[in-house]
Image (tube, rainbow over all chains, first blue to last red; front, side, top):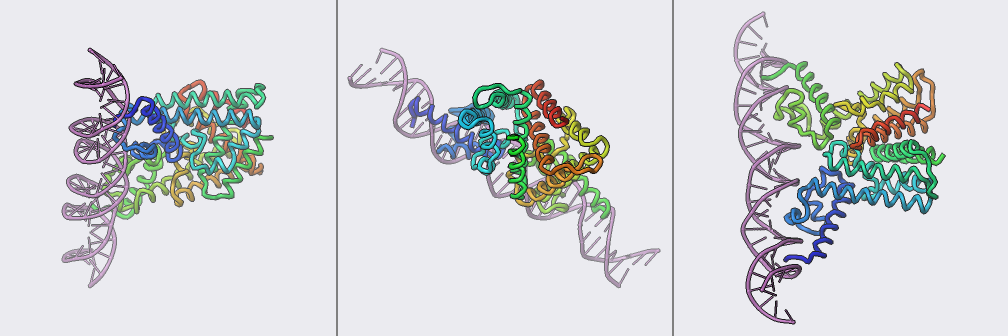
Length: 183
Length: 183
DNA sequence: TGTACATCAGTGAACGCGCGTTCACTGATGTAC
DNA sequence: TGTACATCAGTGAACGCGCGTTCACTGATGTAC
């Protein structure tokens, strides 16, 4: 049942997209090839027609997730300015999203133990995010160190808000971080 | 080869301590019972004489790790004040430690997907850390919302500093966060 | 205090399972003439 | 344009492995008398 080149390329993209979502939902280790292929509507056997091994798919999926978070933040920056982008990131909607947008908050501690290729991918995403945040919605430059602190606070607040079992504390963390970053 | 009650209790503590270290090094999922028992100098078969199942050990190990981070921060606060405690947390030594002190920075994204028992343990640790940070080294109260923002920035900066493959960027993140939090 | 027996901490083999990976196979697609 | 054949996307069974968990066993510890 060979597929046309266009169809095969679409299949590959579907696998990457499914992997990108599943990995942000469950983490890298807990996302099996079987699960990711099934999420793309395929059986596991065909995986190696598209990717060398699991690590290569993970790297591509994280690159896709990185493009997405950079795109969303960029879009929010240009649409609602620096404050709007921060408020959107620190919203309960982002905290509770079935597929978290930000791969750093979703995967941070797992990415630390990844191999060089994956670390390279996520480092590039981090650098792009910092450059984005070092401009406000109208393209004016703010300082790089301010961007670093802002992103650190955003990611840390989201990680802590998702850890706690106490809903009131979780919302309090997001609210405090938001209020502080919006001055 | 039955052991005395005291010896058995010491064994149990050793397992919890070994698990606490290994889990912060490698994460929960990547720490097998076999590895944790071996780290305590035992074989895997005896595990169920001490714990009901893996999840119960993980919960205890995280409680122990929580006690440790609360202890370290408390000690630093009383020894070198608020600024000293923050500087110590955001040091490259903490970033590169074989066994990370802070379980939130080390395990944040994995804890999010844990069961209720484990979330309860980590929530309690988070609350204790916030109460600690809401006092300075001399016992004076600062605001709770400030403690939340400070801890968010600390955890986020450590997560990001550990993710990046770029050593210069990693150190820059820690330095920026430190400078900002120390005013 | 001594003796006989029950308890149980720890060992090492075994289990069922899901993992990443491989492979023989199918049949539509792509290519050479 | 039509025909013959090579290619390869996708399927489903199979592999070796490590996982969490169970279990028969050992022999020192704890207990009853």
